Image (tube, rainbow, N blue to C red; front, side, top):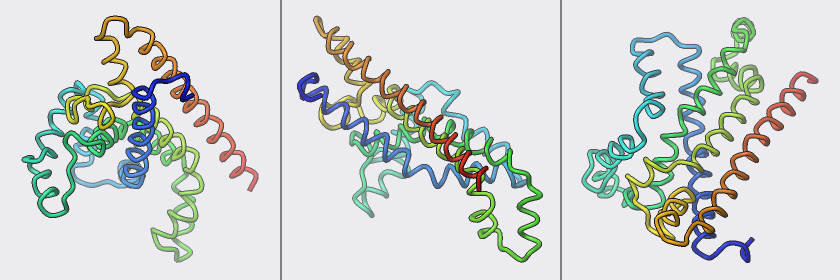
Amino acid sequence: MSDWLSPTEWQALSLSLRVSFWATAVSLPLGVLTAYALARWRFPGRQALNGLVHLPLILPPVVTGYLLLLAFGRRGAVGQYLDEWFGLVFAFRWTGAALAAGVMAFPLMVRAIRLAIEAVDPKLEQAAATLGASRVWVFATVTLPLILPGIIAGAILAFAKAMGEFGATITFVSNIPGQTQTLPSAIYTFLQVPGGEDEAARLVLLAVIVAMGALLLSEWISRAVARRIAGA
């Protein structure tokens, strides 16, 4: 693949894979907790939380990126303290690209996991609770194995979404080759340069292959896990 892709294209691909991996891995625990809260708990502000989770799907990605810049920029409401206390900087860094991609992919992850949780009969959880199991133990031994296909599907869909994120990422971390230039940003850059259509076409083909591969892998793993659980 290194012969087929130029160094710039290879950097964009490897950075996209790293950004998507960390965006998915870091947001997954929060995604499971949020999905469980929306599916099982009744509390004041539940609808507001549901709206907040799905807001990135409704807002223009550029607006989401701008809000992230206001919040997590070096002088942002949160970013200034992260920089001062922990030396953690998001704006114009690959970590910021991961944050933006994670925020944009989060609704898809939560929705897939929430549907899996809602498909579980609450009576199974109640039966385990009546036997003296704590809520954490009920979740770990009853709910989690049953929703595992949904978690896997949600994680892989989030990974694919993160791979294709453009608007929020380029607004929040710009388009710096080798630092914040992901696959979609590289495609955009090549399309702005005369004669860059061949490079853009290669990256578009690569993006399609990765996205389709992720979807097929999600379907295959979900079915395999579901069959295993049913057999058990």
